[in-house]
Image 1: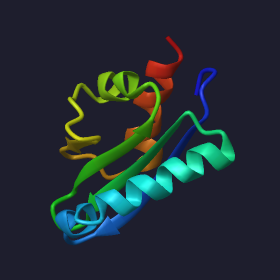
Image 2: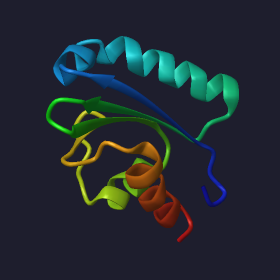
Image 3: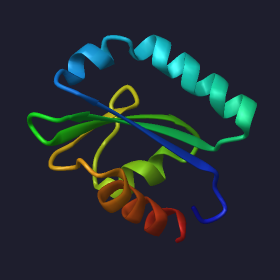
Length: 101
C-alpha cells in the first residue's frame, strides 16, 4: 500500500472479547512477524459474525495512518469498526487510499 508493507489478517468469531483477551500474545506474535517479514504494519481484523462488526488490532509503524483511514482512534492498539466485515471490500480500499497520500 503506497510504499508501505501492510499485512492484514482476519479472524471470524462470535466473541470479539474472547480474542482480545489474548491481546498480549497476539501483539507479541504480530511484532515478531513484522520483524521477521519486514512488514511496516500488521493488522488483525476480528470480525463478529453475529453482529456484523469488527475490532481492529494494529501493530507497527504508521498507526496514525491506519486510524485516519477508518476515522477512528486506536486505544491500546485496538479500534472498533462498526459494520465492517469484508477485508477485501471494506478494509483494503480505505487503507490503500490513506497510505497512497
